[in-house]
Image (cartoon, rainbow, N blue to C red; front, side, top):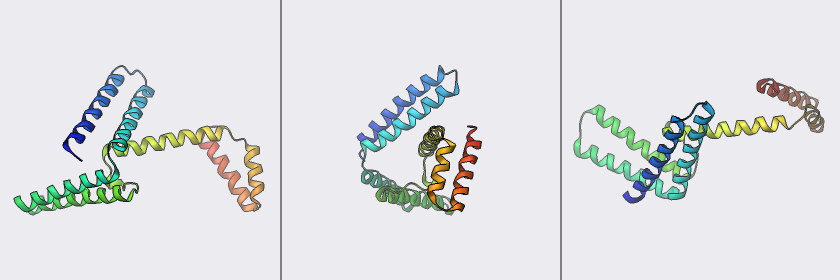
Length: 170
């Protein structure tokens, strides 16, 4: 990742943050804040996904790890400082490996924005579940349960749907 592409990403993120801040300043309801936050997370994801390939991101993390490793070798320092630097090197290497593999980031490797992204994705998925539950009747779930063939599965499916309705207040 070049300094120019990093600067472009930071500039775009700052503009997006300023827009979100303006929306939040005038917000009178939590829904407006939630919308601004969701837009910010989406914009961050778009910037990260569109501007840089996974390999470019992985390479940038490897470069960061290299810089830290060389700094540690050059400066030395206390044992605690060296251990902290080693931990940061491992963090960047692990992020690079995840980017190359395309696997979801482990909880400990996520940045603040990535945590927000996962929470936003969960929120959207739960909203979709609520919409789907409202479109399914008890009779449909009962017919599905009967189609399963097993009395145990029928009872479990019916009980699970009733519990879901209870949780959702439907």
